[in-house]
Length: 276
Image (cartoon, rainbow, N blue to C red):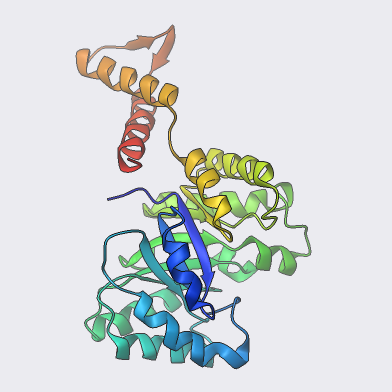
């Protein structure tokens, strides 16, 4: 499996940008039929977006449909079933309950489609049910934090400190379910240093990827989520020390190396291998 470090959104109403998005270096590219498309253009965008879902080399392909609790979302799901794409994933926005994920998965399974799902948690109700949502279906490969909608509902700024509890709760739910956690995009596309700092904070909290809304953000996000040479070298030393002394107490550079430290080192090496 390749690394999933970055997810780049592209509006479903701008099919001329799909190719540029695929060439931007993101690990995942998501055509957006929800927030990025005006109501009058939903049907046209749907027609343009569905051929994007295919099993081809390159970045993983996703389509963010409208909420399955809305008429447009139902139309999106039925159109996907009719189109019978050969691969890709669907992002489900505004997921409040685990049953929404299970219902979408059941429809796709009944149609014989093997599409993965990503649940976007961006409401207070969804956050309350984050653990159940993350564990809802074997087809669910990731949850994404929708900070913009959630901050508006909570009445807080879209900033780190006010949303720290929400972010941490979603990471906990994802880790418990053994799936990946994607952080909200940095909304100021002109400030790449702020994007880098926000991405580093997200990684330190346990997120495994971050969404992007502009191609210039992709390299920044990929860089943060790719282990650096020093980090890889230390991880390799930890794993090699365990292999040389599998039953004894390990000390490396004067520090005790226990099983959790070894597991973290193994994750670093796996991440580094996936990123190349």
